[in-house]
Amino acid sequence: MEHAPAWLTSSLIYLGAAVLVVPLSRALGLGSIIGYLVAGIAIGPWGLGLVSSVEDVLHFAEFGVVLMLFLVGLELEPKRLWNLRRPIFGWGAAQVLSCAAVLFAVGWAVGAEWRVALVAALGLALSSTAIALQVFGERNLLRTPSGQAGFSILLFQDVAAIPILALLPLLASATAAEQSLSGLDRALEALKIVGVIAGIILGGRLALRPLLRWIARSDTPEIFTAAALLLVVAIAALMQFVGLSMALGAFLAGVLLAESEYRRELETDIEPFKGLLLGLFFIAVGMSINFGVLIASPVLMALLVVGFMAIKLAVIYALAKAMGLAYQERPVFTLLLAQGGEFAFVVFQAAGPDVLPPEITSLLIGAVALSMLLSPLLLVLLDKFVLPRYSRSNGPQLEEISEQQDAKVLICGFGRYGQIVGRMLMSQGLRVTVLDHDADTVEGLRQFGFRVFYGDATRLDLLRTAGAGTAKAIVVAVDDIEQSLEIVDLVKEHFPKARIIARARNVNHLFQLRDRGVTDVEREVFESSLRSARSTLEALGWPAHEARESAMRFRRRNLKLSDEMYPHYKDRAKLIAANKAGRQQFEEQMAREREERQRRSGRDWERIGEEEEMKKEEADG
Image 1 (cartoon, rainbow, N blue to C red):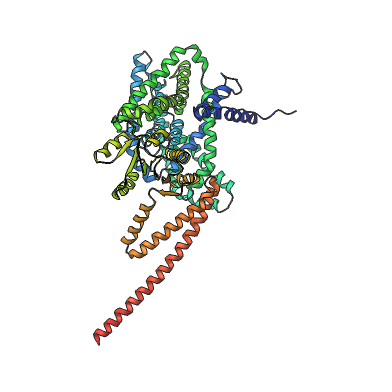
Image 2 (tube, one colour; image 1 turned 60 degrees about the vertical axis):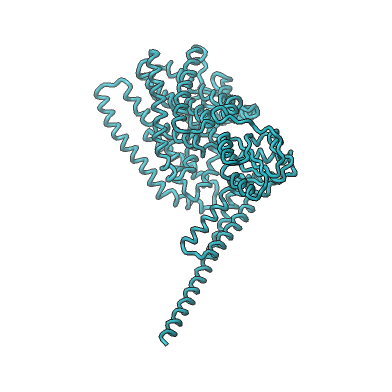
């Protein structure tokens, strides 16, 4: 009887561990990342010992980080990336240099040799791009100031890994001849790096779109998926060839395709592979934790983990304050950047025994892996015990709404959207009760005479106190999608007589509200954007009535397209197909209308010309 191939056995082990442990971890409220890490510990050399080739798995699993950076790049158009250049190279450089400087000073002060202290400081100053971006994404924080700042710093860290790796050979002992040779080699490497980056940029601009268009015309979905993966693998291989970060190359490719018509298709094809490989990456990190070193030196390991994380927490929190981030956003931002990062493994392993003795390398790698394991746990504790109090501790001290209100209209959320709704209703003499959970907003609006109460509308007891039981209409105007859906669920269950009028952040939010039976939904910028488009047409010389009719036709067709997409929104492939078909019909109809308008305009000009000619003849006569 033949034995199963090694790859089949390994796949069975990895997938089995993930399927068993990750759902259990999520059910306990610990998140998927901890589940993957625990699964890796369980099957690794210090667990059941089912897998021993940890380094091979880690190298392969790093491709999950590469795919993640490619998808992040797809969300960033070059213009937007250019706008982020200052936070990337300003705050990013400040974080890496300040953390590295403090860590180096502490390491040197406790007696470490200066080269050891420098390499350890540079490696420990880096953070986990994989964990941080995943958490930012799960919490819908990527578009917030803290999310943008975190992304900028993490991107700079990926760039900073290049000079850090280039610095390591200089720290190793070498003869003068070897040093002169390495100088020539470094010049050639620099030319190679410039050539590869220029090739990626030019190729992305000139060749990628025609190539993807040609592949898409084959109408073979699996080949388009293969082409998407080939694109990322090829660019990662090029960057690896010149000694640069694979993730940085993938990010650059994503940015170049951010304005492409195939952007959504690429996201759809690569997303499942990214999720699986990121999971494998975290499993490999769990497997790489050397519990032998931990058992041999538990106190030293604990001091190292607590020490470097405490230093980074202090430095990054001060940086967050200097950046002007809202105090409510600082704890999560600080914690996510305080942990060690995946590039630290590369730095410590690349240093070699000439710079880092093997026992110190094992200690540092173990400390980084443990910090990545502890961070999600600390995040859970932060959510449960710190953030609820922290959100009120540094702002105005306001009491939650406590007096029972008899409301006809209840508005949940009184930001830029809710204020317009509220002011219009108040102008009609209506009595409106408003709930908002931002103490600064409540305090500021009260000074202008608004009747606003402090409270979290996702709490049933506060909804009752605010008068939801007597309200005929409840306006859900909060900007957080998860909170919005949670409020709708509460109102539907406990106050079914109230009519819900909801704000939708985007089309997907609109569809989720429709799933809950909410029919009075408005997308927050839809109508205002249409009005701006109408004004633009008028500025270009269109008659006002034609601009208005065009805007109304576009509105009706856009709403119809949303209705056609709604049944398929949970199936991404069908959603994309319905969207493409609807847009094609829409564009064809608009093209016919443009031709008709041009013909009509031509006839008008001809008629005007004839009238002018008749007037001229009458004047001459």
